[in-house]
Image (cartoon, rainbow, N blue to C red; front, side):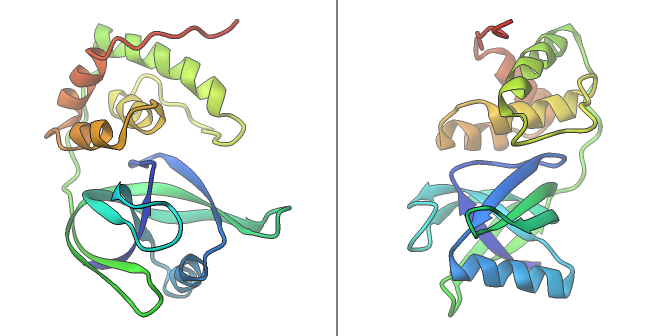
Length: 193
């Protein structure tokens, strides 16, 4: 499967929302094409480079996203909200004439649901605190705090970890392994209430 790629210094996973402000012509054209063809694009963590300017080198894993909302913001830029659909491995990529990365990807199989346990419930409580800080930029109408996979994905997206650390988590074979690694991080913060 070949898809356009958007390397970023952040990650989005299935069920996650990622708001973006677009100003570079290559990404505005990418979004127009996604609307025309009713397709999405891939979001990958940046391994080397920057969010804007010359194409960045992506880590070899990402998430296929769909565009769920768009408008012109007060700053005159195109604002879109994307939602993570399915993780993929990036097999190869090239740069097209618009300076846009296009990648050959292999979608990951859907995983079996992860069972919630008492350790993961503690992580869900920490996630609830984190979500207070990201609203109203990201709003989840259905916060699935009793769904271990949803909790895992949102923590990986929202925790202030380095790109290397996030990529290491993404390389783990399943969400049980990811949650166990997250549980070992000694995440400490208060709700401020």
